[in-house]
Length: 583
Image (tube, one colour):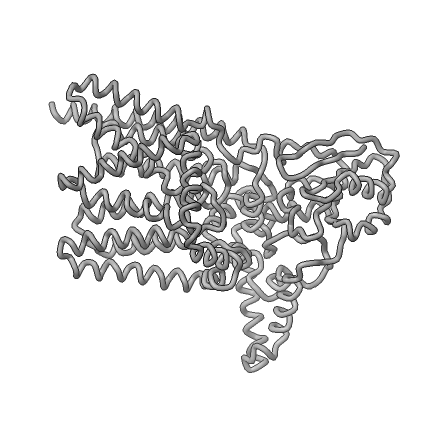
């Protein structure tokens, strides 16, 4: 009889969770349909993932020997066959030179390609739309080329795991560019996060309504949906953050026994997180510190050394497979930004306040005071629980790492933005739901009244956080996908004199043009050779902030001789550029 009741309860729980997941999935897909534009970083996500040995689009093409040329001739090429053939050829070249690498054509060609790829300015030329399409999409015959992804990220400031995932999806759809490619990576990662969050709460924290409410309210929050439609690595890092927490709760429940399977899991989680976002290392270190305190407190010193060794192995493996992290930190501009921010102690309070407002914007509809009160109540709850010696170790593992992670990120990020704290938002909603449950039990003994009261409080939190009243970020309703580019369009893309790659954001639009040219006012004379062809449309983009826009527009029209063309359309495109179209 008990077995039957237990089975029915399980079925009801499963159906309720399924309904919640379907609701969140439906809303997420709806927001995916609503997304019409891209942040420049999202365009870089596609370009760095899919372009063949070309991290960033150039302003022109000098036809010089490039890294792509070198890779086809001597390197990994586009597939395993190219790699093996070139490996044998390179071996023969080295053998003939007595393995004196610097004495070979191989070395000279590499130096030439690196030099050409590192030139900031190239010859101004008309570039076909195919050039930008190839930057954004996987070209025929170049699918699953992870060496290219690895090379491209070497020139960027992020590790490559997210880009490998996106490249894998795009490789299944050769030659096509779609927002759904990036959406699918986020969708799988964030829906898996919700499942892990549910299992974590039900297994280790509470058998009550808390798990369902946390998954529902977090899944329909503005923060979750903003993460869903922002095609960067933050959805994947949210999953890995939740997975590391869940795994540590498992270890704690099993008395910190680390057998081969557990050791391998811990190493994989730490390496993948490091391979996705460098800030994950901070969360992993904080989790390790909390775990070590718990182990030492219970006298498990020997097990703590076994545990520490897995982190050491993960660190060594991570640096070996991705040594460019050292370059990113010690010599690139992001490393400089980090060191400058972390050394500005006098700005700490201001930065923390600003980051908390970002957290409130995405978790509580901008109601920072309400969120602060709720989190202070959560702290009081935690103090009471610790005093009563209930779930003390679990609280340390679940909530202390996100708390200190927030403070560290707030004072060290290159810019104050919620993207860096998206990975800890599930813990914020969990803390709020547990607080509501705690005070409900404390203040009301009548189960029906308590249920009604808790339901009303959950409804209030939902109203303050939901993605229906507070539109998710990064939908960009008037963005690139809304721009209709007529056939036979040539594009003149004007950028400021000191700008670098301002045009990258609109690679998708440029890919639909017959040809495009990137110009500054200083080389406007290039347009004098333009010859109008019957049936052409001319699109002029003035990048913000091009000085003297009206004067610049008149100069472009005069240089191209398009006075006889009628202006067909003009208006703001997204929040970056002014667009003019003549036909």
